[in-house]
Image (cartoon, rainbow, N blue to C red; front, side, top):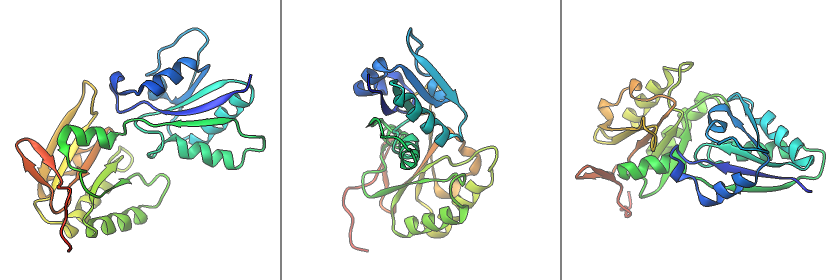
Length: 245
């Protein structure tokens, strides 16, 4: 029997936010591959092999999936959120470029990524043009992050920041906030959405001058409005229309 690989997004955390397509594919799998905490979200059953690994071995995971599929396994590589947003889909195709054998059948199954779950909790802060920036410098230099951040702010995009602050780089998010203060007006709302859709969920909105690095960690998605973003009741939204600047 020919093996296949599916790269699946498990959504932001709540089981009910896993899509039916992903749930059905997980039921067909013989092997689950992924970062330990994501694999731990999959219920064990007879005939299912779980392969958990560390956070920084994406290419190793991808090669392992290709090897298993080549032997006939039905492999699901799991990511949180959406697998195409700073996750495993890109790593799989990167590994596939160097794969010496014919590639197995591959499917990428979308999921609800963290910025969309966070935006829904807040209202509609990404209701106009927006960009997503991964603030981790694990795979790119921080100077590039700074440059992209400035261009996004000057372009008046709403922004979503992934991986804003970790124990190994606690000071970089302070630099991000400094750049935003240099480029944006003071009434720009900043939304700190932590662990959305889980029991640990928290949501905090402050004006840019009140934002501090300690408000974010690796389970937080930070959303920043554009110059037109406003509040109605408890909701934050960005209008769908914009005037020529």
